[in-house]
Every structure is written in C-alpha cells, then in structure tokens.
Image (cartoon, rainbow, N blue to C red):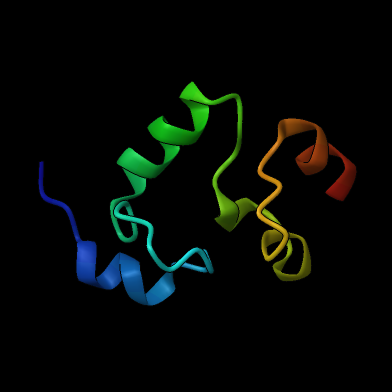
Length: 62
C-alpha cells in the first residue's frame, strides 16, 4: 500500500503532538476504533483540543 504520510501530516488536524500515527490515517482510524473512539479529524477544532474522542461526544457535535 502506498501511504502519503507527509501529505497527510500537512492536513492532519490532530493537536496531540506525541502521536506516532500522525499522517498514517489507516493506523489512526484503527487505533481509535479499537478504543471505541473516533479520530480527532472528525471533530470541530474546539472539541478536538479537549481530546475527548468518544463516539458520544462526536454525536453531540453533529
């Protein structure tokens, strides 16, 4: 699989800096899904900064 990590990193809105999955969208989605969460890029910026990645919080946003 061809991953466009550097291009993805430029568009990534996640503010969690020590994240090892930045730019690796498939790994990010898999990680959050395993934890019953959604990736930060699906949240509005103000909510993303709270690091509450719960599906409940995502539903409240929309």
